[in-house]
Image (tube, rainbow over all chains, first blue to last red; front, side, top):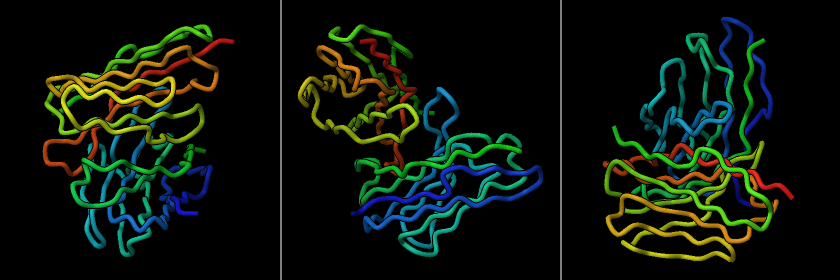
Length: 115
Length: 111
């Protein structure tokens, strides 16, 4: 079955530690996205990538970094500079073209908490 | 910047009652998308509307895109407990590089 796989499902971060969230898709989609969702809130865009080896900052990129070395993979690193990382992180993908016109497919998410 | 607001933020209904959520954009949209997120789950794409004044139905769900393409609504007829979740609308930003998600409406349905 085609889809988006995020791992781990739950992650705990110690103070001063960088952690990396995995996102893999086998939908052959060109565009991939990372969102942050706080309890009871909407989706805020962290980073997005429309093509391999290229990515852009979203609305809340500070304290986060990404890479896009392969079409199917878009890992997100939450750095120690992100002082309030506790949230639900969602990865999504869409067919390219005008990405604003394409529906997005989401993974199951990773819940990150501070220890 | 571009904003997409939804009202109400939250609604609690009895099973069988109708429900409507409204989505308003600060800019004209080329299309509007609707997503549903079940509690503890991830957003799932429901539908996309493209034409001014367009109305689409999915069983008990009716989606409408405003004439000016700046607002949209989702109406659920005779809600069921399976309708529980948060409903988000989303539209492209001016440069079409990303989707701007609305603030969401959380629906709770009591049996």
